[in-house]
Length: 338
Image 1 (spheres, helix red, strand yellow):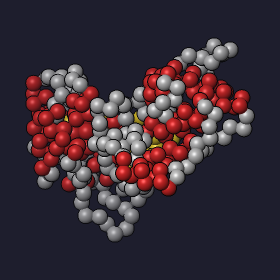
Image 2 (cartoon, one colour):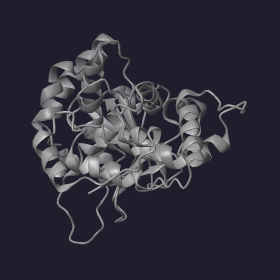
Image 3 (cartoon, one colour):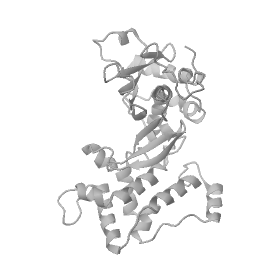
């Protein structure tokens, strides 16, 4: 199978990791080439498009696709022979061991799917380097996997979606609260009792001229944040205080005054504010990722954005696992590939 030149750099580095057993980053030297200069899909997922809405699965002949002579993508079905049900896409080293069902596969990266929805893009290789090393490895391993998973998820003609984790959301909100809302337009408005206003025309032009590498001041991103925060309707001062107390409890894990736990009522009272904050946080995700901007945990959002994904809405309490409630308040970003 033919493959793009950019993957030859990635796979050669990855091979060194597997053969040496090292936990050091396996693609740090190809970071710029794989992330900054890569905007094309893998050829295994870039075949000729049919004129109708249906696309043949790249796994039509086999549940394994060889990216090159070093790596393969395997589709692991979880509901019998249902190729459109719950499944996983695994990036594996291309070895004879993959054909032995008694051996545990050496998984480099994985993406989960259910019907046309992708989620849980994960790097499995152990990491001991910096955030920049991790980001480089994450993208180099997950991008080719995402290309093929997207193609397979579109076989029934439905628009492919993704649910992206917002790791670090609670920490970010807590830090903004400690700075009296600095860093968050939504929190600043809530803390000072202001109603969010739409950007004026001259403000829009200024944002276009001054947007930086981080992308957090991007015009469309700021307008989206304004639009989302405008959904917060506070009829009374008591409503503002109630929402702020709930947001603070969700972010810190410390129950509100008079409450013994951060429970359903807290998540209900803070829902609209928390979704607006999650929307604002998701717009901090950049392509390419700037690992030096102090924001970590948005690599999955950035991954999907790198393949034309856009945040469409925030799903409140999309995951109620205790660990995820602690780091993101249960919120996830629903994204559409356009």
